[in-house]
Length: 114
DNA sequence: CTATTGACGACAT
DNA sequence: CATGTCGCCAATA
Image 1 (cartoon, rainbow, N blue to C red):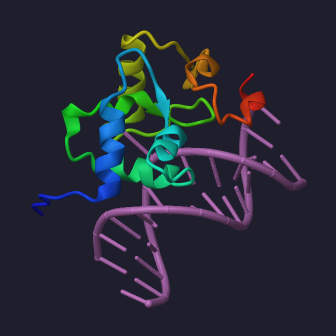
Image 2 (cartoon, protein in one colour; image 1 turned 90 degrees about the vertical axis):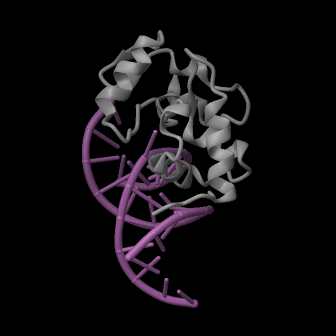
């Protein structure tokens, strides 16, 4: 299936993810908010799963909002390995100091992360 | 158009 | 803290 054009939504998502600097992470939710659909975290993950520009986008830097790693097209283990390699500390599939990586804005449920 | 699905989120128990 | 349930969104069949 030659898909030359991507949906507007996918373009946005991939663009955001592509900008994530090395050693930093973002949540699906944050990306969803950045794309203008705060509740479309699922759709964000969906877009990344298709992963049109595979190596161009650091998809492994996108994680769940509860501190878990989430999924990865090539296996969650691979994702964890990559993150650790970038200096992210992970314990039992959970990100340590996860709170620290979050944008301090719009986190009303930050208490669950303490 | 409807139904199904999926790298998710939030809340209840 | 673990599990279950519902909700939300976009892509695909």
